[in-house]
Image 1 (cartoon, one colour):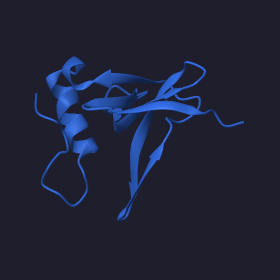
Image 2 (cartoon, one colour; image 1 turned 90 degrees about the horizontal axis):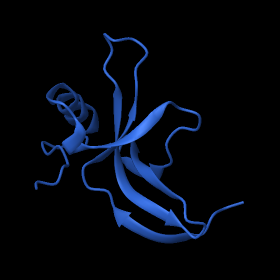
Image 3 (cartoon, helix red, strand yellow; image 1 turned 120 degrees about the horizontal axis):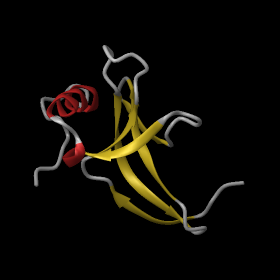
Length: 99
């Protein structure tokens, strides 16, 4: 059954973070594009995904040990990883909003 979307808003500087199992491996950061609120009151972030020149939106992986986190909550090392992993392909712009 599909849920009915009640509202959509831009998700500036938000990420979905999947923790790595190995301390030597960085967490995986995926940029959120939008927050979606459903009629039943639940909210989820939709992730920006791309394959080649095509972009799409997807829900976070089911059953993953992940969480939403804002840019301002990241430490300097995590910010560097998020910038590298969340960069918009084929551009020099990392794709973040300046405060």
